[in-house]
Image (cartoon, rainbow, N blue to C red; front, side):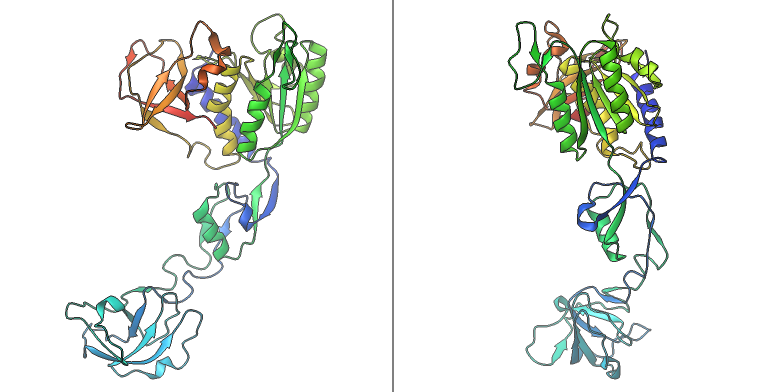
Length: 412
């Protein structure tokens, strides 16, 4: 049985290698938010492509020695964004100026912009500097190429695209954005005791909840599930369903039959189908029987415990953060990582990391750890209703003091 730290490292190593086999596709610019860029993006021109006026005001031609020969300027014309400024170069006397607007391309000889705030109010064609106005060449001008130059690398392949990236993509004319394709996901549940949500269960049966919950979480993360199957507690049925799921998917989630019971066939069946076991068993509670590995087709497999709390905790703790960063580089830079202080001291376990339900306390943004009632075990999904996510309590032979920062995984 390995530690949570080692489990993280092994999972990250597998996911880092997936980028070499993930398909590429193109999406329109307005639909690329949250996707992973599949190609480098290079500047096709300087940015700004011209000396850009940065404030509304007047443009003047200030001498190189920074001297001001007058404090009264005559307005000779105006320049708006999108105009080429033809003719404005003729006004070169020291007391000339042109009215300019933010975003306009400023031609020579104009080299300084005086904002309206530094000018006395006036309704005529002259503008007078305020007494405390300080001018210098280049003031309030966004100079050509000061953001980036033609040919500069702007975005690297593997970048998780967020709102600021869209401005850059638009600026280089990238209307069709190359991104990594979404993973094909399959869900396979097991158990003779499970019936469909809309079915009437028998006396010894229960309605399945793991698959609907995981399916909804994946859809919320824009990771639609392509295949959903339920397998009886028979080795032949499980082998047939898993073989089909592995062949059709990049990521397979299995719920149940992963521990050491006489009908826990999942580990042996995965082995018989040629899957590579990366680990089986993690020193955390709940969910320690979790299995993780790769398929013969190069996909990944998460075999989660069947108990609802264990299944959801393992999914939110290990799988969902990686799938949200599918193909991202570097994988280990997790933007979803959150650390919050404990509101109260929590009893730790020397041999196991505890993944306990937690509630965010509004009074200081602290986290109160609420461990599942041990008398009901990891099947007590109703015990999660008043919680906001999972607090990760590190393995140690001591209490974890109040105020200690711990990793927090919010429910989707």
